[in-house]
Image 1: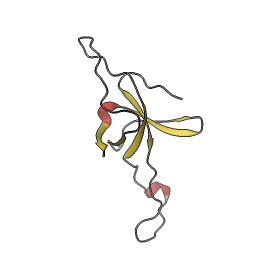
Image 2 (image 1 turned 180 degrees about the horizontal axis):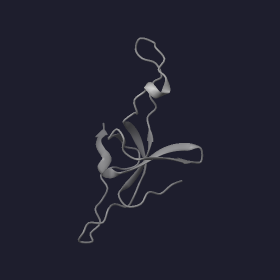
Image 3 (image 1 turned 45 degrees about the horizontal axis):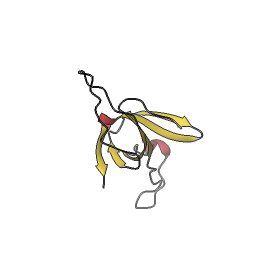
Image 4 (image 1 turned 135 degrees about the horizontal axis):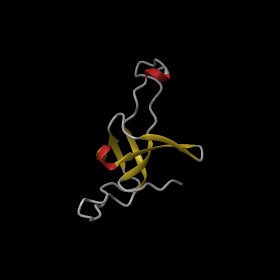
Length: 94
């Protein structure tokens, strides 16, 4: 398993439905990138300029909404993840 560093977060991206409400099947290039996911792992937090450690707001298991093109896609043990900075997360979905 991957362990994020600093203020980075690893999450799994929610899958998107392949059909529209009308039943039309979408081509993979016509789909928009999903913007929600579940946090798998979080780093220890960023270090401020005065040297204090800033705690993370999100935790493993949180469902989050993130910026549309944020993060880097990585693959580990045949699973796909998205690694991003915590600042790219917009909200926790409750």
